[in-house]
Length: 205
Image (tube, rainbow, N blue to C red):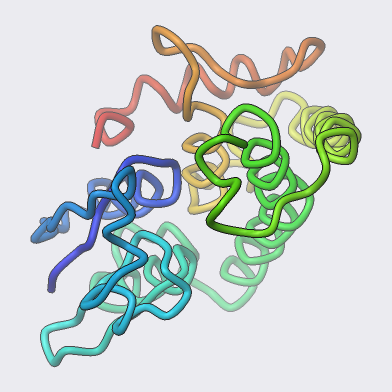
């Protein structure tokens, strides 16, 4: 398997997931700062022109981090990071979906339209800056909702450490200084959770 990697929280999610499972990825770096991902041959294999991408041993390209992680889980089920039973897998997918739709997608769109606007301006359609600032507030509201749902539980799925934790950790860590976090103020439960996840060796993958 070849793993097409770059900077950013999406590739970090897959690297961390693979590291937790003890899977060694054959990493090929993609220079996104110089738009390598937007040119052939990469863009021919991945028309979404995003990273990461996993190329299986039989040459199949798999994109989207949840799809890649699901594939890796099927190849090496243990330790279970999505779930050992239908109920566990459903719970993990529920939280991944909530985090992806309500936090990750909004945060990414807001980032591209504000702090990274100069880089993305001529590459993709962007929100207006005022709309992006409003979206940031909506995302912060959803993060505080997640903080309340987490409560005193060690992980997002309770006692189970899962893909939901990995995805949220990677996105809340991206761009933060000196091992910090992008969590908003007033999230004590998630702040403690972040410290627990950051202490895992795989977080450095």
